[in-house]
Length: 192
Ligand SMILES: [Zn+2]
Image 1 (cartoon, rainbow, N blue to C red):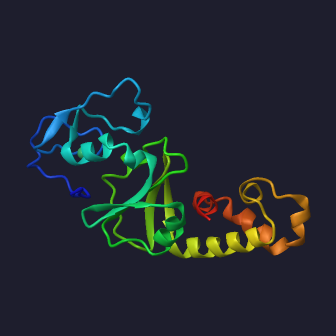
Image 2 (cartoon, protein in one colour):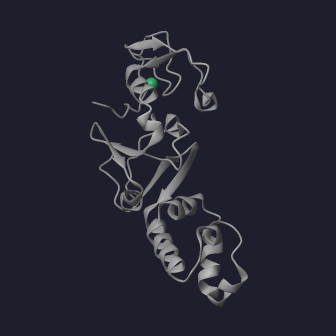
């Protein structure tokens, strides 16, 4: 069983070691030593140990390679087609969501101790970034992205400069441009 961490510190945390991922000082800790091929040390906190729960996430490479959510003590892996339905209808709180484009970054290390308690506005990790998700915005973005794709917008039009001929759909272009300011848009365009 994988747990979403308790979220308050306690004076009963007496282990002198501190977890490099969640910052807690649990009873069951092991000393932490990053292997030489570990490239995400910028995602770790100050500490010298790793708690049992974080170790499960850290050592199993499936959590890096795949997208997933964690709720009610279990992890559910997501295919690309499951991503937007999950953001629009998130699991029961507390929950964590990690999404990845290419499975290379362990951005979830930043959110293991930051469970979400709201299904309307919550934070996810997307590769090595933390992104705020507003459920209502995702619903609107999905609609606009689908509409644009039907009219011949390529993903690069949705994320970069829009091809001049697409400006015949002026309203759509203006919406796309306004969404580009929000990193959640990149998640939607990736998942669509
Ligand atoms: Zn930990």
